[in-house]
Image (cartoon, rainbow, N blue to C red; front, side):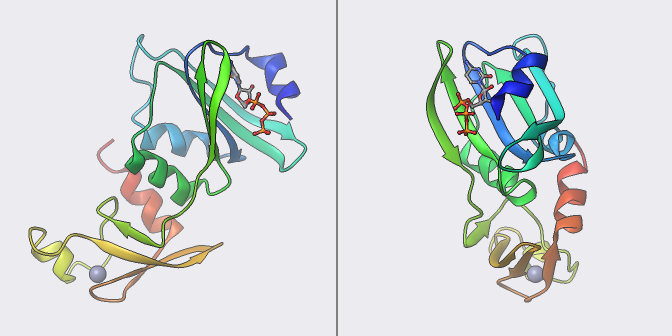
Amino acid sequence: MAMDSELLVRKIRDGTVIDHIPAGNALNVIRILGLPRGRENRMALIMYTSSSKMGLKDIVKVEGLELTADEVNMIALIAPTATINIVRDYKVVRKERVKIPEIIENIIRCANPNCISNQDRETAIPKFRLVSEDPIILRCEYCERHTYKEDILRQFMEGR
Ligand code: CTP
Ligand code: ZN
């Protein structure tokens, strides 16, 4: 699994490796994370590399980066197979498979402009329930409007 990618890019010393990203989605992942961030976060993007589990996959390696819980959840929404590996002194010290939460709060907006969560953000924090993982479908807790992968991607790409 890691063999192929290591031919392309060597191991990192300290940071985060986002592995098992569905092939072709690494660019979406780096946009969500606001990468590249500059010289503090040396990084590598590996796309369409072979994986025994997935056929093809993408990998993003970033030195000196730690992800917030919201960032991990955003990755889960567009790359549900991803694993987050925390690397310290060349060793993987933590490996976590992302998981789409049953309730998704605050990280995306409802697609319905008339939804209360778009009118009065103070009292109605955007809140969705996970209806389906594959394909991903979320349902707004206020207006019941469905949100799909394309809506999520569009939002993540806006203003970044
Ligand atoms: N990695 C890295 N730098 C390190 C350690 C690991 O870039 N110092 C990368 C590996 O190349 C791999 C990922 O982090 O892409 C996970 O590493 P590891 O757990 O060692 O690999 P596998 O056992 O192949 O992972 P999995 O079982 O999750 O497929
Ligand atoms: Zn709504």
